[in-house]
Amino acid sequence: MQQRIICGDTIAEMKKLPSGSIDLIFADPPYWMRTEGVLTRVEGTDFDGCNDDWDQFQSLEDYDKFTEDWLTECYRLLKPNGSIWVIGGMQCVYSIGAIMQKLGFWFINDVIWHKKNPTPNFMGTRLNNSHETLLWATKSKKAKYTFNYKTGKELNNDTVTEEAFAKGERKQLGSVWRIAVCQGTERLKTDNGNKLHSTQKPEEILYRVIAISSKMGDVVLDPFGGTMTTAAMAKKLGRQYIMIERDETYCEYGQKRLDAIEFEDTPIARAAYDEKPLKVSMEQMIAAGYFTEGEWFYFKAGDGVAQLCADGKLNYNGEIIDMHSCAAIARGVKANRLNGFDYWYVKRDGKLVSISEVRDNYRQSLK
Image 1 (cartoon, one colour):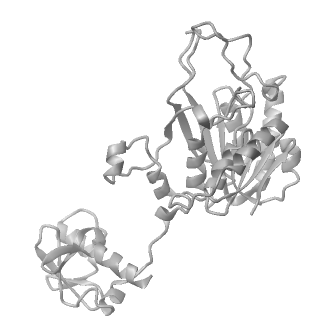
Image 2 (tube, rainbow, N blue to C red):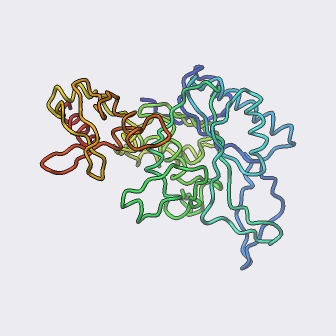
């Protein structure tokens, strides 16, 4: 199990790693913010933004070269079916995206991180900058990348209310994520009580990224480890991790953070919602006694529509048809087929029971 922090220059250290060895990369590179002077809050205190040495570059050409160099190594390290996420603000995301396309990366999605609690625009001279962009990509258009679609639904609190979620409502996870900026006890502090890192990302972003785009045991690389949020969420979700960070202080505090993190064995970590159910046939279920040849198949309204044949097909007005086509014909829809397991019912103890429920019971008996 790889769980390590490498303290050193990211490009030099990535060159030491074997090609095609990484399943998932999350990169939070320098944004090259180009801030000048001192920003002052409304009440008169100075705003401690990002003016760190690691975010300084001489020119756009200098920044682009740095970006192309580290992305080139990411491309080499990524497995053919792996994927990469890169986060950036308006200052850098367009340059990063163009370079990614130049190197051959294929975009899957861009995701908007909509900050619930953005830093105000203190001068009132432009719109409040309340989002950042994440780019999700693979090495090629044909890559069979991991996407835990149903896990994403379980993590979607952006378009499903807490009340609706509790009642079982699920919706697709979209490309606008409403997540608060890192704050409170989640933000790492120095021994003096100052924030350790100026651009620490919230755990919820990394939790989502890792949960939906990797599997248990996959190797996750972060070439700009920072406060090790990527590693913390990777460890919590049962993934391996390699963090590269040049700042020794970040590495020291990051390791302390990781020492306190434990793996949480949950359906999200295991992507249990995306496990494909055991495939079973009607013939198998008839042979096992879960269905009976000649019994009637009903719609929810309660009318007997067709009778079951020994081979799992249905006798509908004297014509032998598969259950899916029969559902479409009997309901009079334009489609040639409907999923019969969504429409057909049988009677058990005088009550209508979905054939999908009967199938689930049969699957359970095989475990």
